[in-house]
Amino acid sequence: MLHIKTGKGNAEMVKKLLVKLNIFDRHNSVQQDKNFVYFPVNINNNDKLNIKKLLEKNGSKIIDMPGLENRNNTDRTSFDALRKKINTNSYDVLGNIAIVEIREPGIKKEEITDFANHIMKINKSIKTILMKEGPVEGIYRIRKVGYIAGKKTYIARYIENHCLFTFDVRKTFFSVRLSYERTRIMKQVKEGENIVVMFAGIGPFAIEIAKAKPHTDIIAIEINPYAYKQMVYNIKINKTGNVIPILGDVKKVYIKFKGFADRIVMPLPKISTDFLDEVLFVAKNECIVHMYSFVDIDNFDSVIDKIKKHAKENGYKVIILFKRKVRGYSVKEEEIVIDYKIIKHKC
Ligand SMILES: C[S@@+](CC[C@H](N)C(=O)[O-])C[C@H]1O[C@@H](n2cnc3c(N)ncnc32)[C@H](O)[C@@H]1O
Image (tube, rainbow, N blue to C red; front, side, top):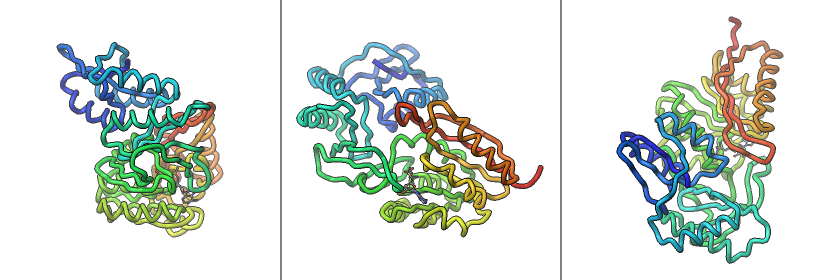
């Protein structure tokens, strides 16, 4: 069973992080020896590398060791059996709602309901279980979800980095799996920056930055009227008046923001590289860009080549600052992020 081994001095902070990442396994006991604490965790393979990197920063490690059950064993065994059968290692928790993904065909409805009820038993804050019923698709990047168990609602109330987000999971994109990225970027931002979030959704990137760095000015552009409406609401409840929400297509509204941005966030991995002209137009003479993209496994170069080609053709310089895999996306593809700096003037 996987555990996070951490020094006693860090234990409190690491536990908070594990709870926040929703990987702390409440079914098993925390163990300790003279110097270390061992937290039981549930981690799926897609997230393992990211979590490993995150934990390395404070000297913690993922290790495999026997677990100590602290709840009803029968409950746990049947939960594990169901989980194995259903072949899903994880489910996404958006506050009050959990969304499960069943990849195995032929699983009976009662088995899925059973699995759902177990999830609600383990995590008392989850009141509703929904199930993914298709891929993320269309311009608005939405997926179909169906109701499985618990209170019948599709409205999620989700907290991240001291910000509350509410939204209908059927009508807008939202991914808890980008939580690490939102935090990573938020931490890089300096007070006083002008920022453009080009594909803002219900506002998580913009609002979390705005809350942590209140002396920034942030333009958040979104094409889906429902997502825009919720972003307006989320700005209001989080009191982040330094975010200006714009309803529209980046291809059209970018024209209003010539040379505005110290930093541009591009969370539209499917086609973000189609917007390099708009990025250049909106960027100040020096500007940092966070570009998300889907690529064939480990092929960061395909995106970097596009960025460099565009720079060459348009007479500006780019410096690649950072790159990382964000998450697995399909058998062949993964989502990556590339941070780069635009320098417009000749050096
Ligand atoms: C992958 S989602 C990311 C949303 C949000 N940033 C987040 O992390 O939750 C991409 C968003 O871009 C929006 N979008 C797609 N094309 C757009 C365009 N041309 N202009 C503005 N928004 C667009 C979609 O409606 C969707 O909400």
